Length: 340
Image 1 (cartoon, rainbow, N blue to C red):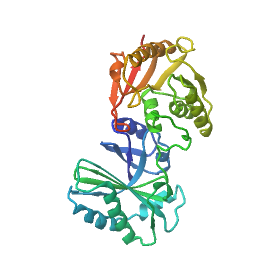
Image 2: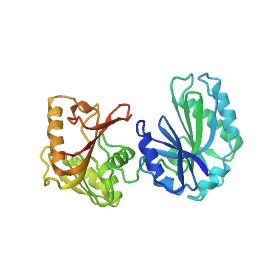
Image 3: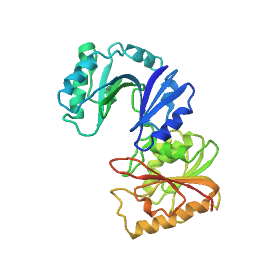
Image 4: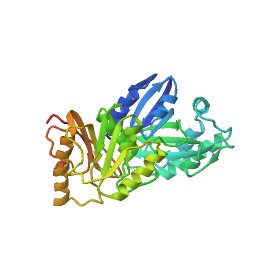
């Protein structure tokens, strides 16, 4: 069994663990801040995960890790001692790797330190280059064959090598963006929370660039979405074409959906919110009109799952709410069972 860990959005650790448990040959062994640890028999199923940002084979767990600058020298020494061949051999069963790969380093930490993430990367690079002088370091992760990740929390550093060449959350289809555009892995998590299943029907009343619709269509759902802005539907159509799926896209007012009552199984949407949206009476009235419309078109017993940074505007006392961290803000994913 290979030890692995997945990096996910803060607040969605349990959702990602649920998705991982559904994979054959994968055993979840623990959860912590922004990550899920597991053991697996093979890597290929992990490359199909939708709710995580990235998956890594665990190379080492360094302890103790202090906040002092002297720790940078320890990072270089420990990196020089890393044994990567078994992990690279496992990755080589999924994709070809050159004998002297180009490599990048990613570093993150929780809490205050007397060193920075770029300084950690420099120390790790120095250690790896010492052990593998033929390897070529590249600053841009997009150009790398291999990515080393160091994730530091408290006095522990978890070190891994990414199983795929590019991060899982960077979907190839997502080429057109708008302000407030949703992260694909969060969209997938919202679908899992909605208990979405192939063959069901789903509406996204505020579809934006179509991320939720595309993620749902790729899972085999029948989807329809719209937005008040005509430009949004154009962006969504372009992204959908790149994903080779064809959701029904409309320009509409979410307060008056042109759909029959009880005509869809699910409503999943990223509501207008965020720094670019002013919370005023207009936004309040939009929320207060849009939610009843979603309740109207969703079948009894169906689910409504919404992302918003102003959860107090969602009038649903029976709702379940999960706070996440996204783009420096702390929005909530709200799940409502449509029992009305």
